[in-house]
Every structure is written in C-alpha cells, then in structure tokens.
Length: 252
Image 1: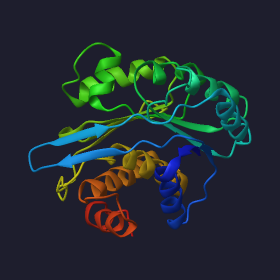
Image 2: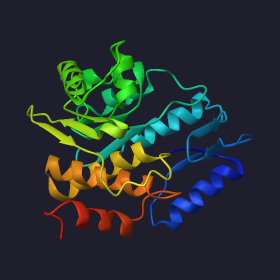
Image 3: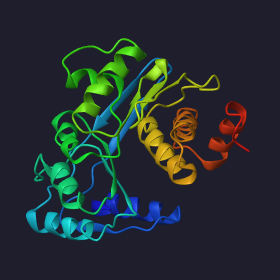
C-alpha cells in the first residue's frame, strides 16, 4: 500500500505483482515516483535520492480509508520517510486510528516520526544504532548502550525494540524484558547494504508470524538481512534458507 506515480510507479507495481504480492496502491497523476541511485564500490556506498511526488489531501484521505479496513489480526508496517504534502504526524495518526482494533503495528522510522507513535504501544520498532543515538542526543558505542536506550523507548510505550548495529550485529529487547544479542553472521560478504534494514524487519515479522518466538524471529531477521547484504539486489528465499541451515541448529 502507498502512493505510486508515473512510469516508475507502474514498474514498482509490476515487479511487486510479479513476486506474487497483492497491491492496493493509490496512483498520483502528473508526477513520478522517485528514482534512487546507489553507487557501490569496495570501500563505500553513495546514495543519490530524488524527491518523490507531492501527495494532496484527497489522495491522503483515500489512503486513510484503506487503512481503516485493517483488522486486529493484521500486521501493519509503517516504514520510511514521508513524502511531500503529508503531515509529520501521519504515523501517529494511523496508530491512533488502529489502536482500538489491536492491530500489530511495526514502525521503522526515525526521530519524532517514530517517537510520536510510542504512546500507542507499537508491537515493534527498529531504529539502527545511529538513529537510536540521535533520539537521545548521544552516541551508541556498544550493545549494552543499545539495551539501555532500548529500555528507555520501552518506557515511552514500545513493546519490542530491535536495533541493528552494523558490524556489531543486532540486539532485541522483548516486551518481557528479555535481552537477545546477535553477532554478524560469519558468511556475510557485504556486497551491498542497501535494503538490509528493511530485510531485517521483513524477516523478523515473518519469523514471528511463523513461530511466535522472539529468538527465532530475530534469527530469521538476521538471516534475511545477511542474504540481502550478500546480494547485489534483495534477499531470495533460497539464500535465506541456506544461511538459516548453516547458522541456526533449530532450523530444518
């Protein structure tokens, strides 16, 4: 769900459908979805991100009407920055609209966009190491630092806090106060980190849907992120399965 526009938007929808995923996009006229260019070398990655379409109030109202159809048994992932024309409190408003339904909401955003959703107790939030530090105006140096500030986000309302930490792996503080640490998987090749955070979110949510277990969900999120890092594109199921079999004894 979301907004698409122009040739780029049509191509996004075509490729998503090709993967067997249902779509319910809103098409914006006389504009184009943004094109983001990533330049990868052995030493660094450069991102050149263009500006996306302007979203008018009529289109925004249509999206909110679609979101109101979401039910308690559904999972909603609110991800990324917001486009031109959309209010800064949009994620907060969506969480408020769905709060009475018990929908499982996951927020992958930064700064106030994330912090303003916490009073509505999102099921999972996933800042990275740098974003977590920015929220508290400090620098996160270790996994223990990450756990300390993840606890502060829980005190503000988040249920589960997952923090991706690059070369330091990741940590999860679950809603019961249990701590989980994951090191970087030894087979990580670091071909391309673009989309690794999104892949971790997708893998974690899929893992929790499949197993109802936080540690297994974190394992699947870690494997999915690693599979993306090991590829010039996004993770494939085959690569994820291969990593799971190599790294986690419980996976058959």
